[in-house]
Length: 150
Image (cartoon, rainbow, N blue to C red; front, side):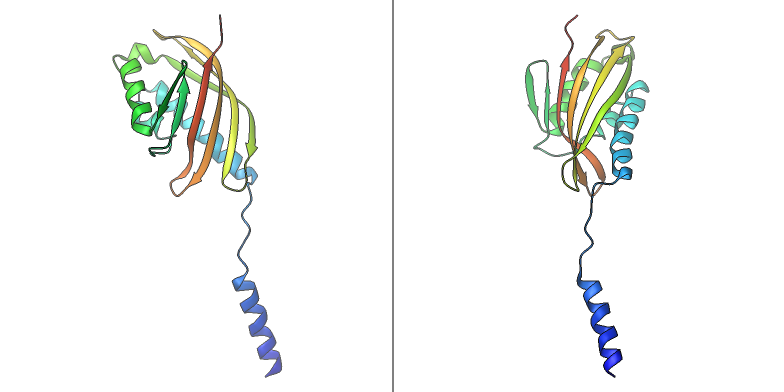
């Protein structure tokens, strides 16, 4: 009986100890996969697919061209206005991730380079993104993109 009670207590103790989640190598891969899917969607002319990399939240921050846009819809409307007029405007987008830093178990900051060619709006520059682990997967919640001066 005493052995049974000891075993029961050990099982109960293990069951009540929450697993500690950490930012793992597979999380880094999942974050960079979001950017890979975004580039593929962009290059296929799929703005909605591109925007799937962003959290559909009103508190999304998107900063570019000296302007701050707040909310997923505002960012999407900006892209629609600038690029959805014709396929030529979108061109070919490439990302090069230079750094992924964990921010706790459920966050990451990504630094990288972007380049848009074959477009009416060609350019290149740097970006820093804040990712958050969400029920739907890793999503961008803050995007600061700048253009390199020619």
